[in-house]
Length: 395
Image (cartoon, rainbow, N blue to C red; front, side, top):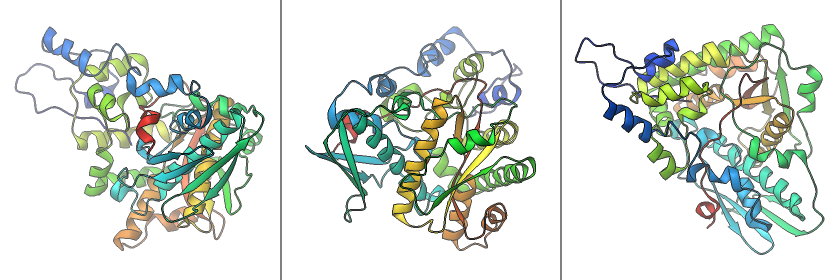
């Protein structure tokens, strides 16, 4: 989810521009009270240098390091929920241990840490691809003991070129609008490499009626999430509105990742940051007017064992594989997990299920959703997200 912040109520009759107003109206003008305020906002939000600085360097240098350290440099560019990057790596001479950083969670948004483990699975897939590209043949063992989620042991081999590996530095979540054209069914099917994913399935929802039903469900789930005070707070905790925060934390969600055009993004950065409530309303509007309105198709990864950790890790590997393949073909992908976040929230709170039965109507009997995403041909490229450096994730 993306959030923005609203200033205090105006004290004069001058027109007051906020990020909320700009993002709601798409206005191509901005009123700033004085040159000093404008200069500070330009500096504070990096208006003139978006996507730059140490927080973005891993995207530029992920190929530079050889061996297992270089493979970890590719792993840190994987997808993760809210860009929490919940991974730790232990690098040995002939193996990499993959652990979860339990402190990097989203609280009630992910009460069973389902998304967190899927994110670690995404990193494992990048790690495997990067090992092969470096002439290291990997063997993955999931859940080798209570302290490790996976061990990737390697032995010398021949470099194995793979377009998916080459796409690691170009893969970004695209939250912007997609073009009004379908992705052919055969293209959707070709995005899925099911190797080693027994017990998982990818269900494409592309026909108009079921796609509209899932769009309604996604909008309703977003509304329920922002109406839940604690889930709203836990979402907001991962939003970084200032460049200092981005460069210090090197994680989380940013204005630059919301899919705006260049002019709108620059204007949004110049305006004062706003409240959680205003950001929630903006996210609801984007979900309705952009995300669901322009989705060419939805993908749902399903399983009969959604609580199984090995299943979640494998689902993450499959998700990353799909996203990298889509990137190779010029297809955008946007993760949309508010339905499963509400399903888990209702379950953890002991509430009467509202979303699980509705989602079940769109899926084959016995299959439960692990995650959901939308795909389509993008109107504009996606921007990179901040990333922690390799030395920050190695224990």
